Each structure stands twice: as C-alpha cells, then as structure tokens.
Length: 122
Image 1 (cartoon, rainbow, N blue to C red):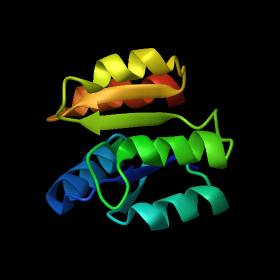
Image 2 (image 1 turned 30 degrees about the vertical axis):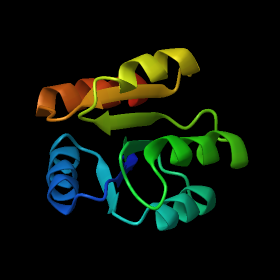
Image 3 (image 1 turned 180 degrees about the vertical axis):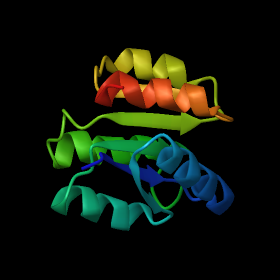
C-alpha cells in the first residue's frame, strides 16, 4: 500500500498540480482546500505526511502546525511547509522540529521527491 500524502493548499491550480506530481512519484494524494476539514481528517486518520501551504485562511499554516503538534500531540507526523516566502526557513530553524521540512514554490518533481523521501524514504 502506498503512503498517503495530504496536500493542504487554498490555491486550486497548485493543489491540482501537486496532486499530479505526488501521484507520479508513487504516493496517494489527499488534496484539500479546506483547512478545517484537513485537521479533522488528520485527527481521525493521519496520513503518512502533510504538504502544507503557509498562507491560507481561516487559519494559516503555522496555526495548523501548532494544532497538529500541540492539540493533537502528533509530533511524529512529517509536515513539509510549501511556500514562496523565503522568511519561512528562519522560522523553521527556530522551531527545531526534526519532522518539519520546507519546499519553496515553485517546486520541481525532483525537489518534491527528495523532500518527501527525507521523511518516507525512497
């Protein structure tokens, strides 16, 4: 059975592209634009990894991550922040979370594969 990767992004074209790329590298994508629904799904049936946009509403990626790590106590769930902001890297470093990664938009298929492989293997 392939690993399930949840993609949480409020930008539909990016969500669709990431779904195609994730399927192409052999994982099962779980795309959603609904941040609240994504949290409920993670709580009920956690995926193998979450690919998370930072700038979303009604809660942003940082608030989403805080709920997953704090409220749900899921410190071992790999989360890759997917962003166009170069400032995210500094904030990630301060968190010292070994299960947190970052990919900068736009991302190539090889970069995505490498980023996911860091947490799920090749």
